Amino acid sequence: MQLGDSPADAEFRAEIRDWMAEHLTGEFAQLRFRGGPGDEHMFVQERMEWERHLAAHRWTCVGWPVEHGGRGLPISQEVIFHEEYARAGGPGRAGLIGEGLLGPTLIHFASPEQQQRFLPGIVSGTEYWCQGYSEPNAGSDLANIKTTARLEGEGDDARWVINGQKVWTSLAQWSDWCFVVCRVEEGSQRHNGLAYLLIPMDAPGIEVRPIRQITGTAEFNEVFFTDAPTAAHNIVGSVGDGWKVAMGTLAFERGVLTLGQQMAFQRELDEIIETARNNGRIDDPIIRQKLVGLWVRLRIMRTNAIRTLSLASAQLGREAMIGKLYWANLHQEMGEVAMDVLGADAMIIADRYDSHEPLDALHRLFMFTRSDTIYGGSDQIQRNVIGERALGLPREPR
Image: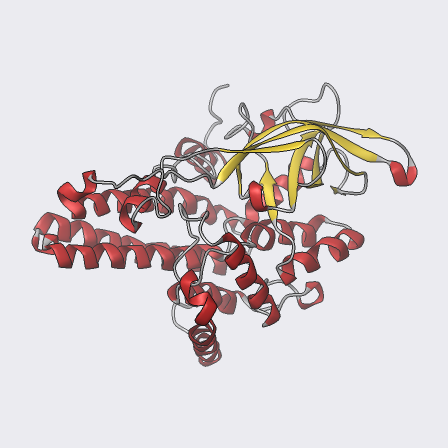
């Protein structure tokens, strides 16, 4: 593990920093620090244009193999890209789910024909994806899914017909495609009989209903499938491989993006500290101690993330299992400290549901972080994963 930059990495860091300073200007200047958690509804079309601008300069999918349209960067430089992107105020990535989740899944599990069809649209920023995993009774218990798909027709006319409901589907209202885990073998249970399907969001029989959050925005959605079709060849792997492919996708969620996330958290902490200086709360020893504690924990987050990525090549994946539990609680506490810093002003929110800018940054941070310990695997589930898979403790009684 190397915490500092090598000469080559330092040169690459300067290149990214200079490029962001030059290009995040003009029409894109309004996007700085926008579109992150709790703010995904802002500047959607403009961020898609920014995604295409990144692609034109080969700054999408930088860690992907060259043969699949990426730059083939080593992990150290991939980390640097995400750190400097966040440091410069790069907007929330419109292509995040495609680049960070689906793309690596297709590279590892898909057929060459599927890779040729779907990877270029992700690299170019012209096709956007959402994830169809969770259901009303299958959130943390993903193996309990009820959404079904049946195969109809023959030859070129063969297609999957999907029925069911997915929930908490981020960005579904703006996505072109959805990767969906379905039950395809009648009578199958748990991890068996599943398939991983790629479904166009403009197919007939798909209805998207936004879910309004306490932030007043609707970043995620319910998605209903009523005899919604997709071509028979839009299955990744084979019938019955759905669980294996789905778990592969989740593994990519804990990758280098954590370092960019850490930089975004640092930016939020800087804003909290600046607010404390401006309103005098920085002189309160208890507030000051809380701010120092957050600063230290952010340094730990970065060190652990780099350590985990360094171990990845040695197949020591269990170290990564602490990551989500750690950052979710850190970020949630950051939102609470932000309210401590605001003091009585924390209770004042101006018409948060009806204005164009529903919440200021610190209130948005607090509201959104209420969900950090739930989405992406609740704290309870994370602790079970650590206990059972990392530490080898007995399984929880069922």
